[in-house]
Image 1 (cartoon, one colour):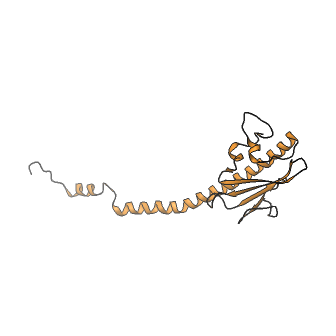
Image 2: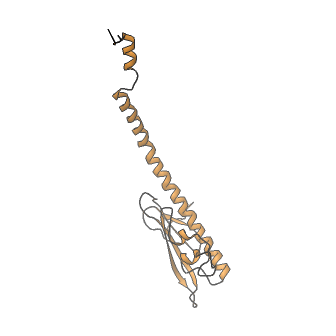
Image 3: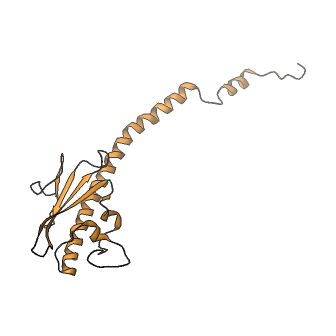
Length: 169
């Protein structure tokens, strides 16, 4: 017994209980994976709903900007989304500064915004337009939105929305 200490049975038991067993660690990992399997789809679904709400709000912002543009310049609606946005250095009918530059570029919050001129008067001023908001991919949203100079926002669950689709509530 020179230099060696004799361990009692209680000391050996305490040393074995100092850590976690492999089974205990596997159970903890399994519980974490189950919680993640429940939480991740809910997170993705809530992110999609937030993107859809943002697309509706951006559509409202564009229709409001169109009314302001028409009232301010007296030449009808804008010829493009970029003319609603423009740069902040010069504000005129080609750079109105009514929407942000990201939205003016046509994509924001997982949605692509497509602006089309529908009708023009004899002087070439825009009298009718359409705006479509479509999800960039299946993870950013499922609904497609449409609005025009009437400012009614319409939605379609499966394909690009149009003037005959039901209005959102």
